[in-house]
Length: 327
Ligand code: NAP
Ligand code: GDD
Image (tube, rainbow, N blue to C red; front, side, top):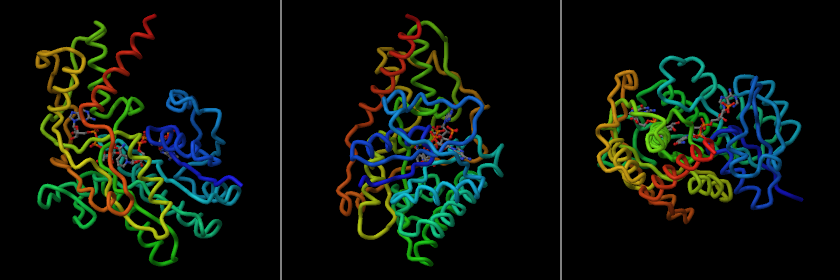
């Protein structure tokens, strides 16, 4: 019998990479999708796996739909990747962000507790929970949380609810505290993809500049394809636990801009970048850098793709996309 896994957030960035990994390991993969007038399967298509998933209907804000899904498929593993994941939008849509990212997780945990209590559960926690807390320049599993956005606040709730279900009901519930991870499948509003997409347009004469907010914040950026392996490994352990997943390196947004223009063969980037206050946030997370000792020691996980390689992969993919479109 094949092992079965339910992946929420299957149409996003991480969902397709994780689904591909699970399919390669011969899992039966169920993907949760919500009602949408015009859903886009483009990320699954990009990886060539759109026909290998069994889609199930549900919405993180509708508890009954989650109960129905869990009850009907009783998956052995549940990866909860669904979220309103754009930090910038979370000030404008704080309640929706809370309903999906916090209360939605409670609903899913309850559905599992009642209808598939032996399922192993993965919660997509985030370095945004650390926010202002900076310790010695690194954040790890013992760093206190100080979230800076409604998104971060909602994720802290979900983190602790996951720990609480583990401690209260003896469920296998694990948090992956993932630092920023990117890829050609990254949503277009996130800064890395906004930059690489903008550069591709500039390179091909389709745009003149890129409008960005604050270039000073530093992020620990890795490749999404590497990070889904850590998610999978967390659920293969005998005991549930919480893990930081990161590269251990940090770069500013400015560094990313510079490296991306360079990867596209454009040396003097400054003329193309316009600072636009519309993209600055009411409260910023200035510095993220993860310490990956635990995930390396306990799970044997390490990132494979370097910062420079990641930038190049994304720039090349966007240039190819626009070249194909214009053919
Ligand atoms: P993403 O591309 O934004 O994907 C999120 C997915 O969640 C989308 O497929 C979206 O569906 C789905 N979703 C949103 N609201 C929903 C709802 N009410 N019911 C059901 N599904 C819903 O995010 P990602 O980059 O893949 O990240 C995956 C998870 O990891 C998220 O929880 C994110 O917060 C977390 N995380 C990400 C990073 C990172 O750097 N990427 C780092 C740490 C943690 P639609 O396609 O229908 O909109
Ligand atoms: N999006 C965006 N657009 N960000 C900009 C811009 C811009 O024009 N200009 C500067 N930035 C800065 C943001 O202020 C932030 O400091 C940094 O670029 C990264 O922004 P995002 O790419 O939107 O990602 P994020 O770090 O806020 O959140 C991502 O990573 C988290 C993990 O730390 C998301 O994937 C979250 O879902 C994830 O939890």
